[in-house]
Length: 368
Image 1 (cartoon, rainbow, N blue to C red):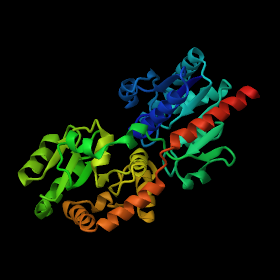
Image 2: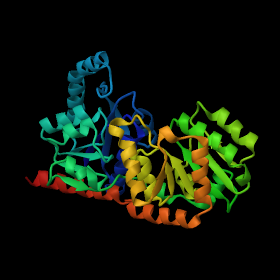
Image 3: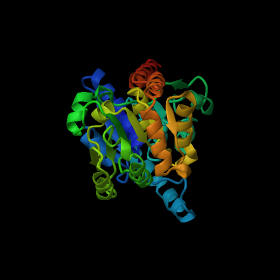
């Protein structure tokens, strides 16, 4: 079997695609999987490291851009369609799978025009523009949330959850303590704001340490800062005498999740899929400038169901963050209940569900 996985731009689009690719490789010994994205997107760096081939097209997003940028982006569409057609002709895929992001648009459109089975996945509760357009003609739409079903055509839309890489749910707490130089038995908080870090979270967490002084022998941290804020945040932890690891990037996310009693993070769809698949309690700080406020909507869903707490960016500061950390530290039953609900929301089998839909679609198309 030959599969093209198109899309990217951010980890929220790319990592679900990688999770599906890994599941396909687990099932099919001789499968050929090729990703299609852009040189600017995170996929150009991440996909090759995961052992998959990637082809690049030249396309830019339109949403949220100025008039000149939108015009420039529009001019690139014909060339991106031609590039997509050439890639599809050379690979001859049995199916093209879109994971969202503007780079998935021309590839899925061209696959449809060439009569190749097509399928997309929507990670967020409110779909992005690309998937809204693609849903008009693709064969199957897979969605993460029940609420998303109403945005797409009935009969072609399936609730699968958001695919999570299987290694994420295979972390080990003991190994995590060793890797991140943690004390066993201490309440552990894992703080991160995405692969590049989040300066507002870094500032608030540093400020929160000033209110957490009496807990420095009881609470420890894994804090992924990104490169830019690393030195300042690391010095703040050192000066306040807190234990843990302050790092630019957590290469071993699985063991970081396993070691953590509490997560403090943004509310991107992939992050929430990982947090719930691991059954973790969380304080979510949604990125306020996400398209269609999707991070806030994602976070509110977990908050409403009791799987997480939420602090809006406009309300984020060291005092509010420290108060919530102290509240959860002093109420282990509340943390346990959040973990229980989080686990019920997690869909660690989402990749398997998507692959089953792929298998059925390819079989039906060939049978027809």
